[in-house]
Image 1 (cartoon, rainbow, N blue to C red):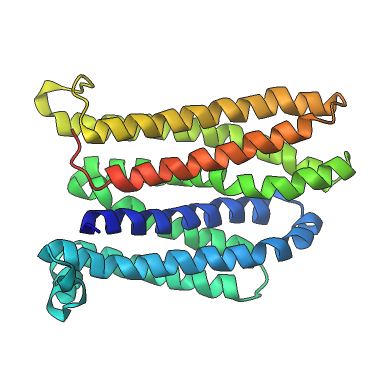
Image 2 (tube, rainbow, N blue to C red; image 1 turned 60 degrees about the vertical axis):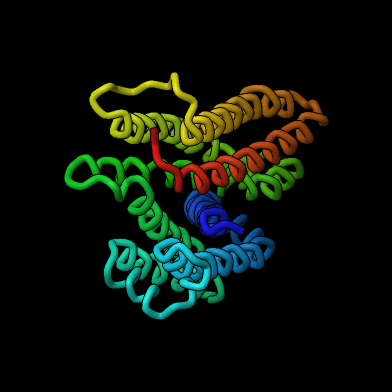
Amino acid sequence: MEIDTGMAVVRWLRDVPTLMLWGGGIYSGVLVPPALRYRLEPRFRPWQVLAAATAALSVAASLPLQAAALGGLWADALTPGRLADVLFETNLGPLWVAQAVAAAALLGLSLGRLPGRTAATAVVAGLLLAGVAAGGHAAMRAGVPGLLQRGATWLHLLAAGFWLGSLPLLFPILAEAARDTHGDAVLALRRFSTVGHAAVAGVLATGAINAALVLGHASGPGGLSWTDASPYRTLLALKIACALLMTALALLNRYGFLRQWIRGDGRAMNRIRGATLTEIGLGIMAVALVAVFGLLEPG
């Protein structure tokens, strides 16, 4: 396996669970009524532990992979000198330490039973996403443009994470809503719908800003052009297509299938579940594409 392939896999295994923990934690810890949250938390606790462990292991694996990339050989991944070079001689070192601390805290919170654990897990996951945003192409620019790009990337991750991380929670909440059409589950769905609109708009807006910042900077004085189908732009276009398909499904769910269910169409609930599952698949695919083209030279 190529070193770049290993790095892309590790990035994907870090980003997906972190996004899920952020989004699911915010939705469950803030928007879902407490009584319903307490009933649902035991079902999701094993998955939260698995997600946090996967994120922590992926962050740990990223350091030797960076050492291998620096040296150009897999053997460099376990060479103390190369590891020290990454930690102390590159900008990636302090960033990796910050990510490692956040990932360890994330795992500790998921294993514990402290009050407010869900919301605290979301906060730490959000901080880990800040570390993710500080790396990649955003790290290539200094000064105000670099800060702007890092901020836009972080907001993009937070909005996308809320959207993607909330979707798995909808399945048990939909089941609760089907049994009680006036209970906490319906309130949780309404709150998700309200915040979800903002999240979708945020994903699209910050995604457009990031694309303009990255490609505009890469294009230089000649300006932004999509005429040359470079690998970076091809994968970015596929990621945009995934986001647009997710948006279309979200709108279909909210303004089509949900209204059919409210009017008494029993089959509409299966349509909602199917569309939601497809959204999750598209979101995971989009993160995979980012993990790959994030390692490529923009242009």
